Length: 290
Image (cartoon, rainbow, N blue to C red; front, top):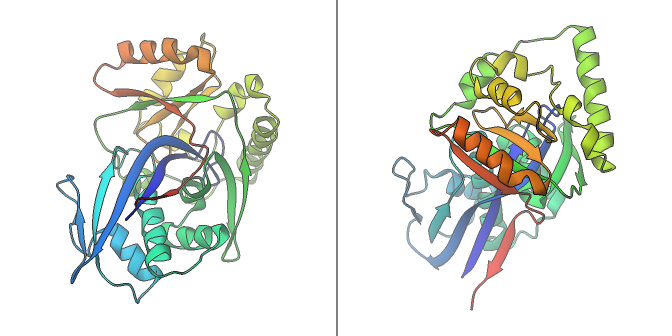
């Protein structure tokens, strides 16, 4: 038996719309058990299928058509439709399931290419595969990616109880931006990548909160984004951004500030889950059991 363990991710990190994501320590775990006549996936999530209509199995079968059915057991503490990569974790689990059962010997790059093909964007799937922060771009049917090791950063997530579908969140985005706005967004993102890669964390707050591609159009769907920035404007943080398509709002803080920021957000948003999240450094893990 093996267990496939996939971390959650926070995509659209700061000014990295559809291009920068970071892995965090919430996990989907999939036990691969005995061979069966039909696919079975055991879990305790009421609205998810328990058969081959489950996304994990669909992705596995799409990756390798000759797989024999197995009994699977899934556990997850990644909230669904909250902007923390729940569907991406399922996609990665499906690819790893096919890789294991089909003896495919896929490389990391092979997996990133496949996962992006299935997901549509690499900024969630790439960090789920390899951990830490990943900068990526899909061009000419290929994904180019680079892993950045970020230290001394903890995320504090404000996770609203009400979900927000990616379709709804995508629907408010404009079809195009002016050249002036696009150039501004590109320049800000370039500086952000340079500073975070070099560890200049104390200088990134103004930059990370200056997205022009999606946050201005989504902030009315997630009022907590503006509220949290206002609440924390005098606190020492590395910045607050909308995680993925929302509604989770992520604040990056130095480790010594985690307790204080968590307390402030808990008091301000008692109806939401306030969760400190360490960065996952490893990405997907395959755990072998005797």
